[in-house]
Amino acid sequence: MISDRDRAMMARAIQLAWRGRYSTHPNPRVGCVIARGNRIVGEGWHERAGEAHAEVHALSQAGQEARGATAYVTLEPCSHYGRTPPCAKALMEAGVAQVFVATKDPNPTVSGRGLDMLRDAGIRVTEGVLSEEAARLNPGFMKRMNTGRPWVRLKMAASLDGRTAMASGESQWITGPEARRDVQRLRAMSDAILTGVGTVLADDPSLTVRLDDMGDLGDAAAPSRQPLRVIADRDARTPTSARILRGGNVQVFCASSTRPTAPAQDLAALGVSIAGVAWRDNGVDVVELLDALGEKGINELLVEAGPTLAGTFINENLVDELWLYQAPVFLGSTGRPTAHLPIEVMADKVQWKVLDRRQVGEDQRLILARS
Image (cartoon, rainbow, N blue to C red; front, side, top):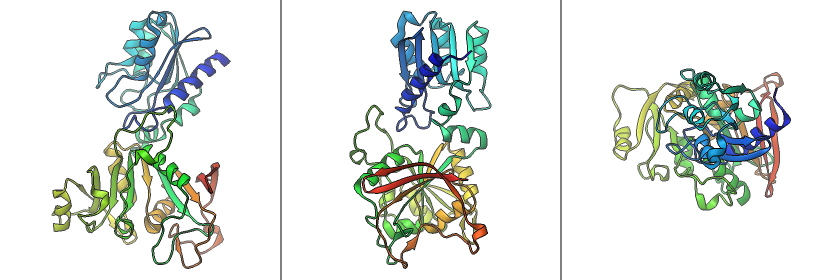
């Protein structure tokens, strides 16, 4: 029987896990609460890869009071040795009497093993407490383990008339400072940021997370690394002087070829990773690109691209969430659209549902999913 107290304790564990939203990559966000009745005696959350997991922090805080207590964990305790010992073993050695788990580990090679270890040790295990809420902590980790591909967020900044730039290409700044600060946080939540070479040539973006521009992070841990910057660039036209190349950690996907071109070799000499994927008449094969990123362990991908690449993701139904920042301005009918889509009749319209709507400064932010 799952009580209201159990749900409240798991809700607290989910709150704790969310503190790692900018910092746990590539590990999932996990929170843990140790309780004796209605009293919390220990709590913790996973902050960074390679450091102690949530259960270890909570057990350390609980000390001897963990013996005979109940643990609430947002994700199945790990059962294997990695950079840290297995958390299932730590719970067993601490003498907890019962463990509530929100979601199983989606990794098919280890799923259920941690729970089996606990049960074999005589610990009562209950699964599925606030499972939907806990799964939303790690949509990319869950999706990659189940499909091999990352969770895709497409970010757009547009005017009231759906334009992202003037016809000349001038685009800074459509949205206000509050929206731009929100985008910095969105980038920090991402394992990788994808753009096309057209955007690199037109705007020369850096696509970095600028900590000073993120504002007050509250109780969240600050990011300690930059997301992987990914460029879809068929012929390796990215200039070696491009700002996006500064600081390293860049992946360029060119056309598949057994012999790297001279421009690709120039980029590789700067430390850029070069890989080949298929290209079609309308651009990069985004399915193959997503598969390649999944193999690299990318959980959450943010797409910040021009209308062609954005349109390809939408047209192929590969967008899990669309983050639209809409500014209260008009840019005119000659401005550039948010996406190039081959739609000619109303029956082919692409329908979305609103998951979240809020005011961010003078702008409106919509988070949408395909309906």
